[in-house]
Image (cartoon, rainbow, N blue to C red):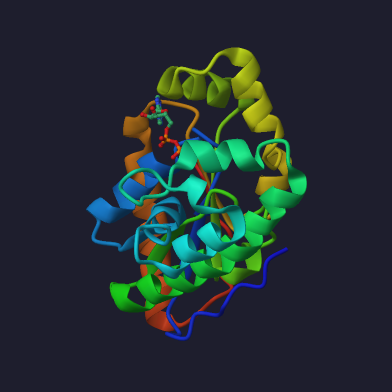
Length: 219
Ligand code: ADP
């Protein structure tokens, strides 16, 4: 569990989550096309380790300058190798990175404007952060389809793809945390209408200040 800093802007924040390759980025793009600001935690995580950012200094303090490449940038491969199979090192890395990622996310969200914001958070459920957002939207698809998309997108073999999935929350665990669910089991063109419905709901919730509307399960 991570203690997340609260949003102080009083607006509606939608946490968009789902397993790897379930279609989060695809769904997020459709919200962005409708004029909704999207803040992606993976992207924020990359920003906070750029040269000159405090997170990079903290990583070098903890793991030594061998995690930097010739240009002084973080060498992700070296860092990954350092924490791979070293549970204590991985925990140390997460303990220093996560608060900085979450603080930077809050700053982005508060600066973003828009009717409400979509925060793409792949590990929202895993990190016990479901309560951070006002509304949790889960992109759902059967595990077999998810595996297939993961192998196609990232070129992973099945064993690796399965081990990545095994390290994440299960489909049921994620669904249990959802207010709203959008199914991405079919063609991507079938996502547009459900996203339009969700967008209408969230705009209405944002405008009225109501926070306890019944969940939408789409399609
Ligand atoms: P995530 O952001 O959850 O990891 P992506 O949005 O990147 O997932 O989708 C994973 C892969 O599956 C991408 O290559 C994407 O183009 C593809 N994809 C997404 N939705 C569909 C769909 N409905 N039908 C077929 N392929 C899809």
